[in-house]
Length: 401
Image (cartoon, rainbow, N blue to C red; front, side):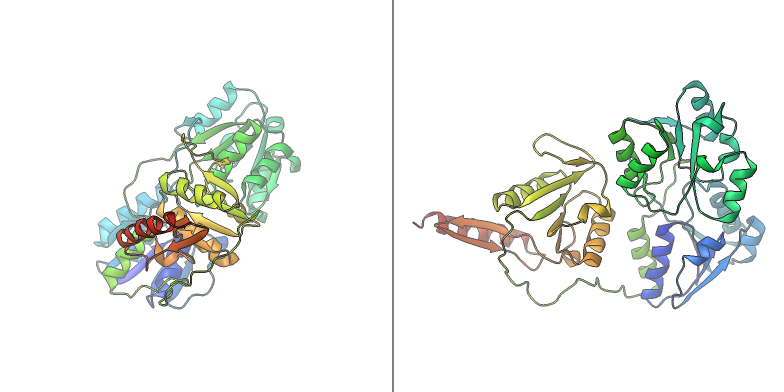
């Protein structure tokens, strides 16, 4: 069976790397030259550039093709054409989803036209972070040349489009992401915007960083909702599905070790340790780290009772700046995976609550008493034994003087 991937997102790019690492082959279709440029050469991956309509898509498919639709969640017409092409040719259609995030206290509208209507009814300066395709519609906002600033890709064609629509140079922020929490704050302040217009592009699309920045500066968030609610697979689910379908052996995580973990006891006094998450596991991690003198920073999208959260927002790579170690204990597998990967790239030890293979250190069950400290870990699978052993060791240490 032939594998065809229609990409256009970071998840699609990551899936291509996975296919290549597994020794697989795929034809990958991207719409723009930029999309082709960011696809580094990968063994087994053939990239095709250019926008295709439903007929052109059907010409590239047959009944022995598995199609992965990894296009943007707001590219509804592309997905519709792909499904039609698959129905016409008998190809199997699979959707790679970018999960949406809960925006919380935001204003949500169904489409761009509704966003324009809302802006016409609410005065204020707005920063548009919805891309260049909708700029013509936003030119219908009353006083748009004084009220709106647009963040767009720094390509000649996009800048020409902005100029043709009457957007002056002072209204254009031509930059390539990703954009951190701090960068979004700086742009909101620079443009003097009290409204941030965006889409729910999910974690990989920087939606959480936009939300947190807007909240910090007190800007209203206007969200254009996704065109439809789709079913499909997340990146990791799609990787597992393709590996099983094509009989691939998945590459082992770079951090995986066969040897037992060495029980290294180090000083945490004053050192920055970052805990991601606000559930029971995260709370235990925070308590232990602080007991040993660490300067703990907690990052989580919510702030439940029982744990003080320093930054109530999604994960950002900049959270790891200056960190001595990190603990990924969110309830989102994809987020924990991103934290582990970023820590590995930055050489920061990381404990991942839901994946032993991605952990560069195991958070121990700590036992103290009689001036002694012991830590108990397993190979990542025997959690019951760890708890039982720690209980017995604590009883011994507490009986010592």
